[in-house]
Image 1 (cartoon, rainbow, N blue to C red):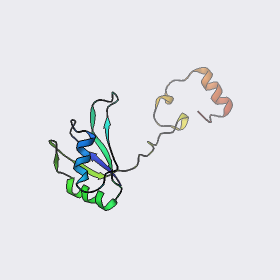
Image 2: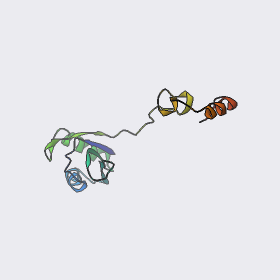
Image 3: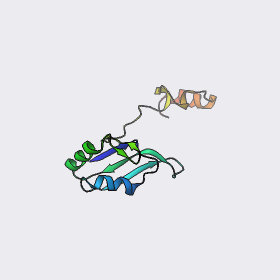
Image 4: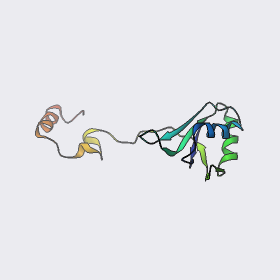
Length: 116
């Protein structure tokens, strides 16, 4: 089971989080999400625990508990979904709705406005 771990201390690393979750069972992996520079933590991460019962026990025990100075926010991780944006003329947002060149518009008229 994949567990979302929110409100992590910015000083926390994978080994600290793994030690906290190992008290409840086997931990498959720990990932702490970092900023684009790859150095600074964004304050959340994910823990993979193979046994669902152990994962649920960890969530119940650690949710709201203080860890390295901050109260943890835990829950079952949800899958990342599409943002709902469609490229091209069908889209309601995005850079493609801005001004277009004349040659771009001529190509679109020839093809009937389909495609990107």
